[in-house]
Length: 285
Ligand SMILES: [Zn+2]
Image (tube, rainbow, N blue to C red; front, side):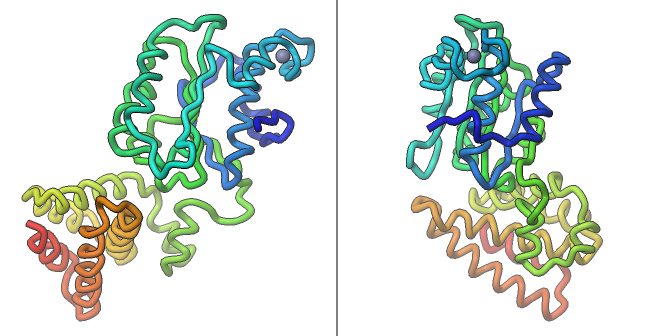
């Protein structure tokens, strides 16, 4: 149930300021370990925009009620509905719908709940919508793990974090779990560029694409610090672990994890990153 009383207060204030200054972004990524709260906040914003009451949003005028009951033509929600993935089929009709002008208000709102479950195709299908929507629309992706959102998607959105920094979340938490120290994490800095290159490399291997050898060159040239070298291997391992949960990708993922253990052993006996990754790429050629 949508409840616009249970929202991220600080985040709502921020959005309200943006709205009043006419500076709302085209696309947001709401990151919240409590996805209900983030989704409520998205609906709160749609109500704020459309409310005809005195104190906006009142949640009780006709527009607000229509929005909150999921029946407003300009406020659309897509979610996996218990499924493991959110596919292109679910995103495509909305893209077509969103290309039209708003029915009742000046702007449309498009929410994707559990956005971390989007397939690669669905995420790629969204990119141009996130970048330059053809019609006035605010797209809000909601996730409990920004780390599972493609870097290409993340970089096109304004990220709003709901987890007040009380406990490490997303990337930092994952790095801490994998044995990185705080200072190493600082040393690593922005990982988006790495993540993208590592993801390409991983895909190329799975596709037996010989470009993987070119990626090895790029990655090992770029990774001068020991922390960066370790990050590449940890990230590859996480990609494979993630694929283990997908029945279609499970077999490859299991083999990849085995190979990565092999690579770890090579690294422990002082084989260079370049040689270790070359070994890996050749195994998958
Ligand atoms: Zn209202």
